[in-house]
Length: 441
Image (cartoon, rainbow, N blue to C red; front, top):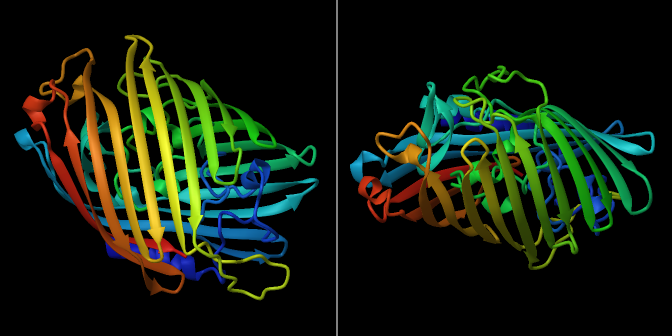
């Protein structure tokens, strides 16, 4: 299963005669961006989210008949081992993976961009989730997932963007996606650099960035120098268990939710955002229960070392990323269930340091958990305190095939439970993951 994932990912890469492109350079290859507006035009993340302009991005790119084509992707082959009381800790071999293709072309005074993200996780994560202690969100076989993370849909994103410069420093962006990412939260964990070497989902995913796969998304954004304002309409229900195809939620498919986001990027190394959203029936088991969500985040990225020019292509700026990089993300997310006024806060700090072929990372989380984790779970969901998680990881990258790297690695997570959960999990359960990460270069 994992071997098949690697073959398909490599085949996509070999289909492109291309060269690496840094996120810190414009898609046209003319110069590195110096403003938020120039960074937005790259559209190398999901939806309309942005990371700091200096953030490196592993990808393949080529120019053809006036089109700029890009390919990006990764696949983890992971084995997770967990230890907790009451047999809550499970073990599993699985693969998290994603591939993204993008095509951009000038049209009128602006640019149009088509983008698609696909994942084989419905096949490479069996049983409809992989084990992750204390994780909650979505369903499997008609029941809430407890101590597990669901796979992403086969179609993670399918959308189009149109960028229209209004003045030298002002940009209008329109985004429409049958499956896409509305203007909520920071760049979601499967796509942000600080989480790129960690094969496991963040515990606060469903308070911070779980809307990165939503249906019938429409977003309008206006950027001026270092500031950006966005508004989105979308369907608020999370994806159903039909991961291979589109299936209506209990509330249908029409846009019924909305969000707003403000982004501030004062320098090439910093990007911060605040967002607020109203979600209509996000959980399929309680489709009448709406939710409000707020997030705030700041990302800091710093290239380390010297850039080296590796090409003599006329008119192209194709220098490699710096010899090292330090990427950091802090996120606060809050979900409030409107019928019960149950408020769940989560906090995340991620840091990834890459020096040459070596990567070191940590993730520190404090996340509110609910009574779904209790056995048996009560009929009315209530809060049961916060869980702390401390993760350290390392991997080393090697050339595996043309345009494809492989990185064997491992990470260890120590948890600390709340008093209400200690009888079930113990006070300090832990987990370990060994993996090989493949990435298109």
